[in-house]
Image (tube, rainbow, N blue to C red):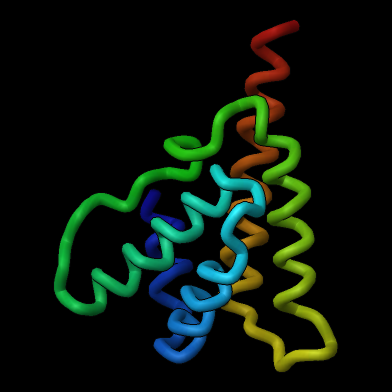
Length: 115
């Protein structure tokens, strides 16, 4: 979990605020993934304001049956935040890349348990 905390800390204040606003506009899109992203963004905002509570891992919000969709969405979001239309926001893109990797590893781990 420390890794996600480090990735979140690397996001500048303006980008974090814009990310929270963007999440508010994405309501209804993959609710479990959205819930974790919102938790993580607000956790970082609260941490910067002096409020301390545990950052929950992605798997606390994302059920196994939604892992593959969450991997695909994380991949797409990482690409979008590195897109040519907008100025690149590497800290957010890095967060999505690491989230994708974490979710994909969990999906593979669960698949291996079945076999």
